[in-house]
Amino acid sequence: MRKIKDVQVKYFYRHPSPKYHSIENVFDLVSENLPKNITSEKYTMKKPSKGLFNRIVSLFEAFFNRGNINHITGDISYLALILPGKKTIVTFHDLESIERKSRIKTWLLKSFWIKLPARKAAIITAISEHTKNKLIEWTGVNSNKVKVIYNPLSPNFVFSPNEFNTKKPVILVAGTKSNKNLEGIVKAVKGLSCSLIILGKLSKIQQKTLDINRIEYRNMFNLSYDKVIDLYKDCDLLCFPSFYEGFGLPIIEAQAIGRPVITSNYGAMKEIAGDAALFVNPNKTGQISDAINTLTNNKNIRDSLIHKGLKNIRRFEAVEIARQYAELYKNFTTNRR
Image (cartoon, rainbow, N blue to C red; front, side, top):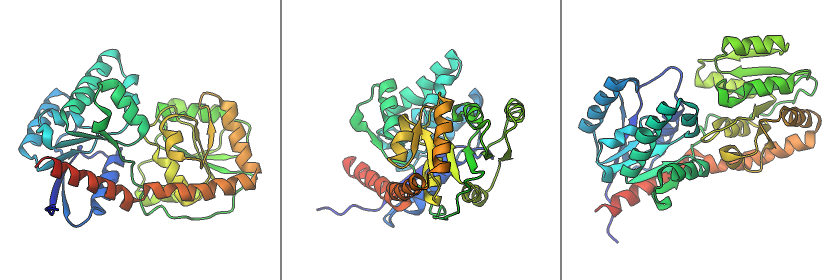
């Protein structure tokens, strides 16, 4: 068998933002855990992906900095339009948020961020089966072209047992965007003895809703990675009944720390949580309330979910996810010789 030479991958990262860094964290972990015969280079775009001028400049910037294997890590998938298709891989994350835009913006994003890049790239990776199915539905690409590789879990999330506060549990709410269903959670906990830790900046309307319903809460945002981990340690459970997710990273982060999880009963959330969560219909606040009460009052269920969660997260270990990407890169290189 002919020996495969060293493989070189160039990662294209979006322009840095103080608000968003999950994609960067994912591929930093992947690159750190790749085998030695795969070298990776990180290229960060100089301009934010806003406005026609910036995006045209970014296209030329990507072209003149192309590599042997070009991997567009997310959010700037339109760069595939100018990169050599046979040498380009695109990763797609959350697709459903696009449908929440105006009709014209949705058409533009579907065309230039999804359909055309997906058709031009040699290989596509999706972060869940749910995202893969949605991508195939939108683009019509052959399913063999799309490989599901999950997001890795940071090894900094380590099991940290606590004594569950049955009198007044602390509930972590991860995210304040419309899909995170904060308003539904507020309705669900109204009248319950609990307090919320809300990760993500609240709008004035959300603050007013919390205050009117007399919800006890702490609001935290723009935190360091270590501070985010501390929030998981400080809580008794994660309540994550989102309307849609491309993946649902908070689910496995909470499971790794050893916290029981409540999440939605469909899509990527059910796929990622495995059998290690209480599942609810996010549109039915009564189900969310019942799940919180179940975890508060039933130690056996809490312990069972924690145990199952620690098993579930093995699927997302950074070394395993990097191994899958390494195999993808090696096959990519071999098949193009």
